[in-house]
Amino acid sequence: MGSVLRQADSSLHFLAASTTIGRATDATIRVDRPEISRDHIRLRWELQGWTIHAVSTTSGSWLNGRPVRLSERVILQEGDEIGLGRPGCDLVVTSVEPSQLIARNHLTGEQRSADATGLLLLPEGRVQQHPGLGWGLEDSDGFHKLDLSGGVGSDLRYNLQIGPWELYLPPPDPPTLMTRPNLDQLHLVLRHTRNMEKVRLILRGDAWEANMGYHVEFFPLLVLAWERLGTADGWIDTKTLTHKVRVYDWKTIEIYLIRVGTVTERVGILNGRNIIESRRKERRISIPPDRIHIQEES
Image (cartoon, rainbow, N blue to C red):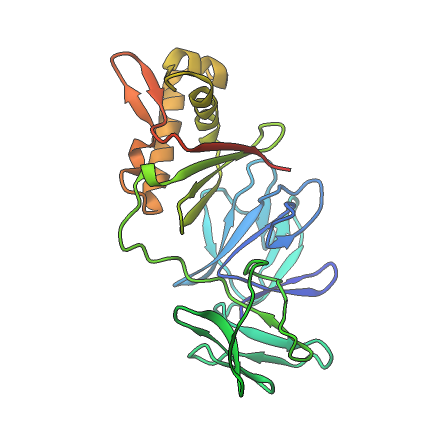
């Protein structure tokens, strides 16, 4: 099980296949220091192994004393030291095994891992994931579905009421899309910090969600969304948008909005590049979907 040891208090954190580290209350691993961003870095399990991705644009990240650039993707090794917000060592990678199901006995410290098929044997029964049913405990009385309403991820504990065992579950596999969703099937959720320093874009469908994270390109999208909600036809001329975004060059904003469409298509949205609708002759732009939600993050 891939894991990270927080050196400050020696606590061990088991990594989900995608783990966020930062100051946010919903971060997978929360590090509450003023110099650390809400969404600071992400660790992901990929075919090559665990990778680190710097997310913060205001505070730095370091790997073995070397800065990690925003565009950089680095494969982690055992013993790697991660610094957050300043050079040094906040986290140490103690293993680079893939994400899997484990259970820990909080009385004895014993730890058990699932086998290659995903089956975990405990004295109280078998824990496994059944197709169509999800995670559950199977004992002499049958299969008991686990309540995962609290979420799935790293450092989350589920009390199965089967004794002293605490269960750590890997995140669910991303949904396999039989058909790629269209923009008109999605809600666009734009979340911003109070000072507008960062804007996050979330694309949400009935049974599918893609969290695009924080990007500077999303700020013009946020301003455009405000105009969409505040005007009768939802259109805004490019000169007005340039002024409201406080950028003097329209070309810069245009590049940002093109990038928004590019990353939208990368997560599997059909015609994602059409997230911005343009009337070039009139020099006016808009967002096609009517279902836009703007939220301030606490």
